[in-house]
Image 1: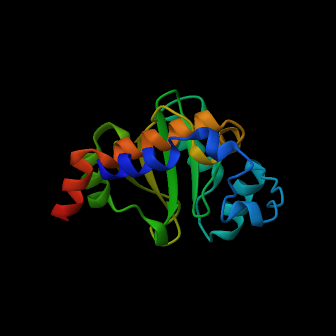
Image 2 (image 1 turned 30 degrees about the vertical axis):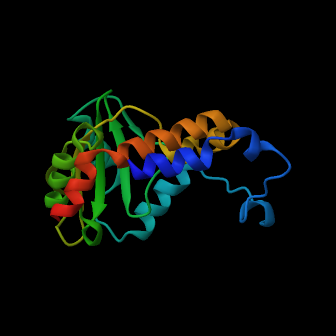
Length: 184
């Protein structure tokens, strides 16, 4: 309740925030960030060339195709993984041994947050050995947009951005969220 109250007090007067009287203490004094151009194919090539893995992209795609087709790389790749969408409902992620997912933590998160956490299943390794291979994880594809891909639209649409912040505050303010942290 406190989070919602504080947010509503701060964001209630949209006219104030959009007026010339308001200056944001940080963003109004910081020059615009330079544009960064991202290419998914370059990111994937970089992962496989720098990760020291014995697994190939073709091996990963072949394994993912057994779970669902078509197999398409997700728009934004991680630094330590190769991630694809397999069919219309599954995400398959291949991770280096140094960056394994904590399955106990994922199970706890799923218990606490319910449907906003994807169901995740560990499927072993692809590559010549566990030391040089990639761990394979299957996850349910959750609805919605990736925040990092939607943030420029949010920046251009204050009402949509405000709705996103309110939605996050409602999520954080729910009893299960607070009680889960008290138990841990």
